[in-house]
Image (cartoon, rainbow over all chains, first blue to last red; front, side):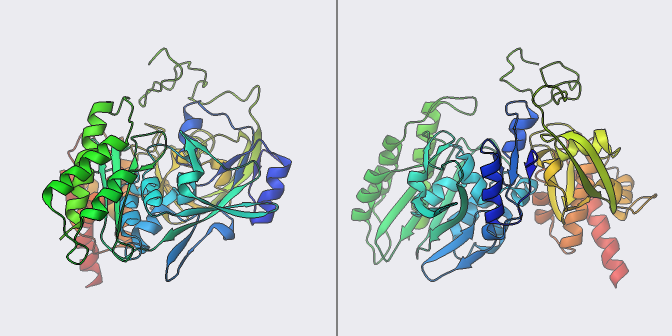
Amino acid sequence: MSAIARPADLPEAFDALDARPDAHLLAGGTDFMVEVNFGHRRPPAVVSLRRLPELQGYEIGPDEVDIGAGVTWRTIERELAGELPALAAAARTVGSPQMRNAATIGGNLGTASPAGDGLPVLVAADAAVVLAGRDGERTVPVADFVTGVKRTVLRPGEIITRVRVPRLAGPQEFLKVGTRNAMVISICCAALLVDRAGRTVRIGLGSVAPTPVRAPDAESYIAGQIDWDALSAPPDAVARFGELVRDAVRPISDHRGTAAYRSRAVQVIATRALERSLA
Amino acid sequence: MSDDPGVSDALHDPTTDDSRGAQGFPRPDGDFPLATYLLSVNGRELPVDDAWIGESLLYVLRERLGQPGSKNACEQGECGSCSVLMDGALVASCCVLAADAVDATLTTVEGLTGGGGLSDVQRAFVEQGAVQCGFCIPGMIVAVTDLLDRSPAASELEMREAISGNLCRCTGYGRIVAAFHQVQQERADARA
C-alpha cells in the first residue's frame, strides 16, 4: 500500500495494517497532527479510520449506550446529554468547537493522555472498550485499557471500534480546573456519578495520576454515609469524602500546575461535585 | 525559540531552523513518504502532487494550493485562525491531515463569497470596525458564518461559545459580537 491508506471498512483497515504494521492509526487527528506539526512524530505510514462504518453512530439501549469509536465529542455533547450527562458535560470542555467537530471518543482512548477529559467519566461509569482484530474482538474495561501515560493494551493490528457506557440513574457531575472556561487542557478534573439503584457513588479523576483513576476508599466511605432515600449526607461526611479523594491521587508537578495544587484542587472539586449531587 | 528541540514555541518563527525546514515542515528528503491526491476546495478539484503525508491541510492550502486566506499561527488547534469547513463542520485545518481530506468537501474563507466582493459577514466586520490587525479575522469569519448558517437565531452566548476557539488579541471581541448582531438582523430583515 501507499504510505496513506483510507480503508472503506474494517476488513480493509485490517488489510492495510497487515501491509504496514508500522502505520499510525488516525482518527480525528487533533492530537496526532499537533505532534506531527511540531516535529515530534514523523509517521512512516497512516491508516485513516474516519471512513469505517463500523466505528460510526451510537445505539441507546436500556442499560448502556454503545458509542462508535469514530463518534465526535460534538455529537456526544449535543445528542447524548440526556443519557450520559457527565460524558456530555466532559465533551463540552474538550478543546474548542473546531476540536470537538473532529476529535473522537476512540481517539481520546487511543491517545490515552492523563489529561484526556473523557477518560475519568468512562472509568467512573465502568465503561468498556471494544477492540477488534483480524481474529475477532475483545471487550476490555476502560480502567484496564489505559495502562500508563499514553499507553494502552491495544495490540498491533487491533482497532478500537466501540465504547460501551452503562447508563446510571442518578445525578452526575463533571468538573474541570483550568486557566479559563473554554479550551483548556485540564489541570485536574473529576467525574462523579451517583447510582441510586446500586447505592454507589463513583468518582473518576483525571490529570492527577498516569492514568485516569477512581478513589475506592472515598466511594465506599460515602456510600455508607448517604441517606439513600433522601439522597443526602452530613456535611462532615462530604468533607471527609473530599479528603479521601485527595489521598487517592498521586499527581505530578508540571507546567500546568504543581502536585500540591492538584491535590488541593481535586479535593475541592470532588467535594463540590458531591455537594451538587446531593439534596 | 527554545534551544531544546523537544520544547515547542506556539508562536515560533517559521523560518527558524528547528529541524522542521523552512516552512516549519521537514524537507522531503530522508524518510518522508509522499502521496499524490486530489482535494475538493471551494468547489474545485485541486491536485496535490508528491506531498509529504504528514502535511497539514493548512500547510497544503497555503503553500501548495495558493489559498493563503487560512492563517497559520499556533499549529496546535488553539487559535482558530486556520478554521475551515470540512464536510460542513468547522475544523482547524492545522489539525487535519491533508492526505486524509481526500473526498471531503472543503470550504475556506476564500470560498465564502463565490468569487469577488464581500459576504454579509465580512461586510459587517468591516462596518462594525471588528477588524484591527486582522490576523484572526479569516478564521473568525468562517466560524461566525458557520454559526449563522446553522443557527440563524443563535443567542449572544451561543455566539461567544461558537468563537471560543478563535483567539483575537486586538479587539476584545466587542466589535466582533456587534458584527454578528448586524448580520443576524440583516438576515432576519431579509426574511421578513
